[in-house]
Length: 225
Image 1 (tube, rainbow, N blue to C red):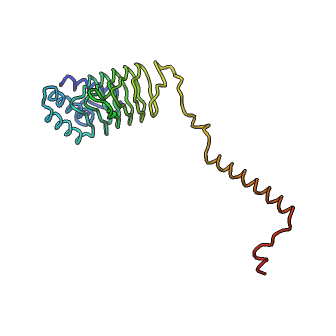
Image 2: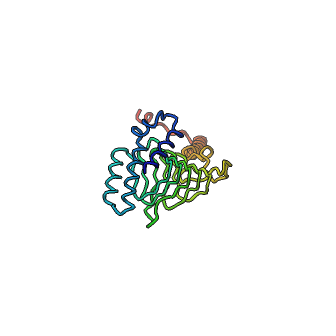
Image 3: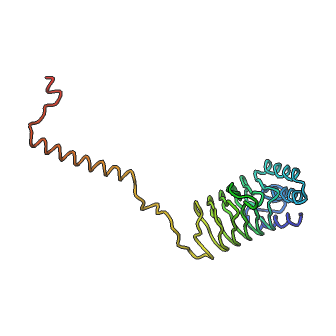
């Protein structure tokens, strides 16, 4: 377990330019604290001490803001950056060298039983606020963009963005995708205004035709006089 913690600290020093020392990382980084508690809770969970394991995971959640179920499987050298709001489900698997940013979720859809959480390969980066849901597989070296919602498996070396997430790059090569054109889509307000203007123009022409064929009707003020 302590070897794993040393690997996690080394991962932080390699990937976080703000980290100044191992001492600072060990005592001040919430991600390291969460992993420290998780590794102990996971050890208990594997040996059938489920209540104590969950108690430790809940204690870690309240102290760090990071919720990792003790049944999850997390590999070596994982870096949890900032960490606030991260949720990792019971059957989730996180491969070696992964990086998880704040607010991301490795969760379920509520439709599956048994294996119901995602599996991340090695060196996967999950951006802040991203949601990876269901028993899907994310290949090695993938990147999931911030606030993306991934609902299907993707191959290694892919980059996924959007809601729902679509693969936009594979091995750094752009992919053609079906996307909504946010610039040239019709403007419903403008269309309705055009329709109103056309109706007003028709009425104006009709009024002009009627005024030309019949005597002018006195205004209400003139009738009162």
